[in-house]
Structure formats: C-alpha cells, structure tokens
Length: 243
Ligand SMILES: Nc1ncnc2c1ncn2[C@@H]1O[C@H](COP(=O)(O)OP(=O)(O)OP(=O)(O)O)[C@@H](O)[C@H]1O
Ligand SMILES: [Mg+2]
Image (cartoon, rainbow, N blue to C red; front, side):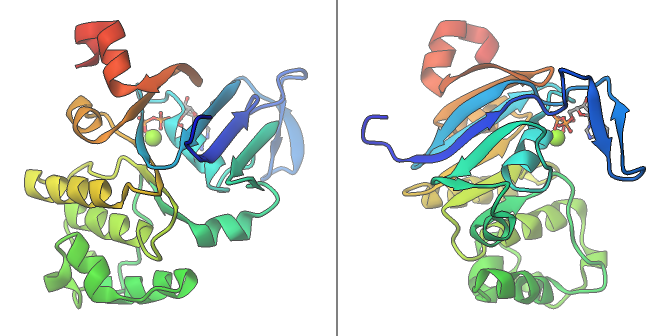
C-alpha cells in the first residue's frame, strides 16, 4: 500500500443471498425470494488524504454502498472495515466517528440550524456553531427554523452536520445537489481544506465536481464497480468520455 494508510477497506460480497436467491424482510420477519442485487461483489480500498468520487447512473448502487459503509444498511455477506474496525460489529462507533451527509436531508423542521448543530454536535463532542455554520456560509441563518430553508440551504446544513467533530472519514452522498454556484464552490473549498489526513468519499452526477475536487474516481454500474483509479489516469485511459 506504499506509504498511504488504508482508511477504509470494503468487501461487500453480494448484498443479497445469491446462492438461495433469498433475502430477509424485516417487516414480515421472513426470508423471501429476491430479484435485486443492489450491490454485488464490491471490493475496494479508500485511502487517507484523498477525495474519491463514486460515480454512476441512477440506481447504480452508490447510495446503497454508502449506507453499507456507514452501518445504515446491513450487508448480506462480506466485511467493511474502517481503519481495521469492523463496521457491522461496531455500528455505534461508526455513527460517532464517521461524518455522513445522506442523499436525502435528515433534518427536523421544528428546529433551527443552531439547534441541529447542538443536537448532532452532542453526539460528536463538537458544538462550535460558528465554525460549523460559518464553514457553509449559513451563520446568518443560525436561529431560523429549518422549515423556512430552501433545498440548497438544507443541503448546506446537512454538509455542516457531516463535518462536525472533524471526523477522519467523511462520506457525502451528492453533497452539492441543489446548491447555487457560490455555495458549491465554498463546499469544494472546505472539502479541499479538510482533505489532509482524512478519507473523503463523495457521490456526484457532476463530472466537473469530480474533476475539480477528486483525486480518484470509482465508477459503478448495475451494482458493480466498473473501474477505480486516479482521476488523471482514468481520463488518460478513457479520454473524452471522462470529461
Ligand atoms: N428501499 C429500497 N427498496 C428496494 N430497492 C431499493 C431501495 N433503495 C434502493 N433500491 C434499489 O437499489 C438499487 C440501487 O439504488 P441506489 O439508491 O443505491 O442507487 P444510486 O446509485 O444511489 O442512484 P441515484 O443516483 O439515483 O441516487 C436500485 O435498483 C434501486 O431501485
Ligand atoms: Mg443515490
């Protein structure tokens, strides 16, 4: 692994039980026939000190992969390790240690931005409201209710929550979707600034974002990784299609 520390090793071997084509349905509490493998035979490492973009069409399995990495989904087979810690066996540790921005905002309409930082910050041991909201240019909105926020403002708050506690692994699922150009660039700058010593993984549908921000690309299709490598190498190999 050269001198790079391995930050996250992912070996998700089939999201469903392929041998029997069965999966557990928590609603009926029974094993049921399944037809879909959302993520299949995925095996990759995400190194520290780099930003990796996970790219792929709608339904490629990006969000499912992220949810498996962050203990939001249990995997049928395989392991996910963060710095040697098994995610499945230590979900509480993962929730405390990993910064996650989910694809769909998980915010409370009846709370202000400040109250969100205080609530989530209590779990992460960080309640520096000025730093968290200032970083996404939302300080002026600190005492307004989330119900009054636009989509882009909610997204900025979700990114701020993911960065609380200065986590070593930051996973952002389409962080800049719905943001205006200025907000997007300030999030890019913040990610760039935090990159050193941290492992940052993000999904995006913007090739510009992947190109500007990311050292590595991981391209998924139909639940499988098609290729993974350094951005400039993939661009060199696949040329214009990657731009
Ligand atoms: N709750 C669910 N129940 C059943 N199938 C689901 C569920 N969530 C996702 N899927 C299926 O899993 C597959 C992967 O979905 P996923 O959300 O991981 O894709 P994605 O790459 O994040 O797509 P997008 O770019 O649209 O966000 C898709 O076929 C989707 O239909
Ligand atoms: Mg998704």
